[in-house]
Amino acid sequence: MAQQTPELIIEAGRTERQYWQDLWQYRELFYFLAWRDILVRYKQTVIGIAWALIRPFLTMVVFTVVFGRLAKLPSEGVPYPILVFAAMLPWQFFANALAECSNSLIINANLLSKVYFPRLIVPTSAVIVSFVDFLISGIILLGLMAWYNFVPSWQILTLPFFILIAFSAAMGAGLWLAALNVQYRDFRYIVPFIVQFGLYISPVGFSSSIVPEQWRLWYSLNPMVGVIDGFRWAILGQETQLFTNGFAISLGLVLTLLFSGVSYFRKMERTFADVI
Image (cartoon, rainbow, N blue to C red; front, top):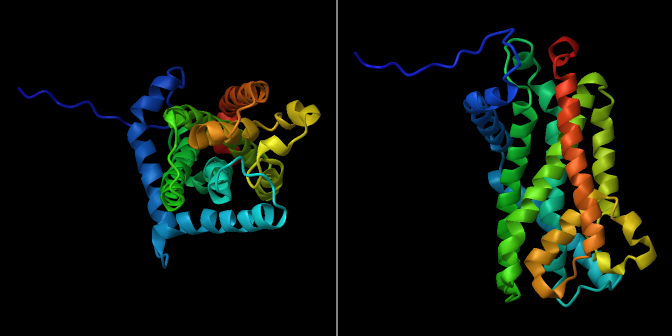
């Protein structure tokens, strides 16, 4: 007699005592949500996936002209476009993840109110969609390196570590905003301000080396400072400097943001179906 493959049944009121096991059991739902969002993003667009390339490229051009040509800020011995785009990659990923995560539960309200599944799947799938854009945008960086004949050093091997930190920062902040946006719908108006303000206080268009030493620790309280400096150190190699004390502070804040985000999201998760 042939052995039947066990089936996963999604049912309302399922106990959450095995929550983290359920995350693995419901992995197919995670794949479905992420793939659906990717298809929706590029469906019926004129140039499709190229939008993920055009936006960071134009931002890089503006920053290069304003900070590199007009303000003549130091580029740490590398072409200014590469300096900027090495920072644009993690920043665009973080900014997109915040926007996607903050609205993810609201967009999937019908699904949340009908069936049980670990709600953590929804914002995580939103971060994955933003990570796809991150990978696509990496094509521009490769093109810039080829154009300027720039060859990265061995430090490029550490890039996956800094990508993991960027993912943690995006996930932690995204979970906070996703949960808060369910309780307080005003947060959908606050997120664009956070993204816009964060762009100017993060070292995207300039190098952290221009920050005075007496302000460096305060400056590092922005978690994205460590993420961006880490990306530049890995991509640009010995041409740039990684300030270890500031990076340690940013890393600690990223981990705090991640664990507190998961904790708050899990605390509020049981109320989502009722509030939404």
